[in-house]
Image 1 (cartoon, rainbow, N blue to C red):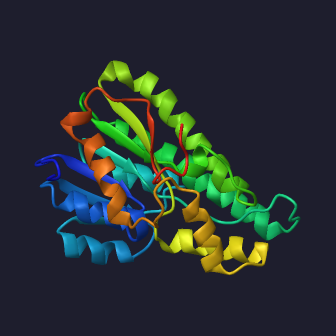
Image 2 (image 1 turned 90 degrees about the vertical axis):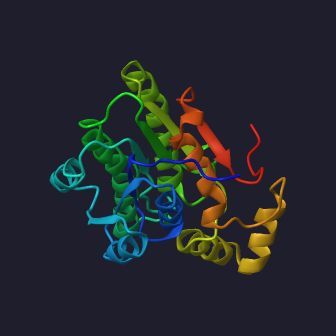
Length: 252
């Protein structure tokens, strides 16, 4: 199946310098859209040059930076809120470092998503789409990652509320809940989980993948199709949904 034609549509993807975001950027770039990619990593400029996109360096937790950067893009037809931080935050750890990490995860994953969305909405018109990257952990839970799990539950709640609020304006809002995808962030989490369980990473990964209805570790490109579908006219009647793409790890 060919990817949808998004010619002429202005698309903004956050967190697009690596991982899922970079995979999404590559697929969206091939649809004919006017692609803007944003990250707090200078590598975003190199990827933008490679794809013929426009790169933006921005910390999405800083209100003024977000207003200036996102507001300067012009009318946005598709916003993909993909920027996120995944770190271990055991609640029993009394260290100041863990508290700082907890706050940073919430700031990026929740506050940052809110700030970018609010700025983009200033130029959005009927027919626009907002697609938020949540997580399978936003529908379930795992020990020791309370900040990340809480933030992704929040993203799903944010998605549902915005769908109700923006529906009268003709703007659809949905979330994508990826399962295990081969990214730097997920492999870092795998290492932490294996270390705390005193098991090998491969043994831990084998157990995780065995819990899926369709075993196998996905690549970023494997999940891009769902985002493209939600951005296309095929999904014009879909809003307020949190769609899993996790090879059956979570079956609702």
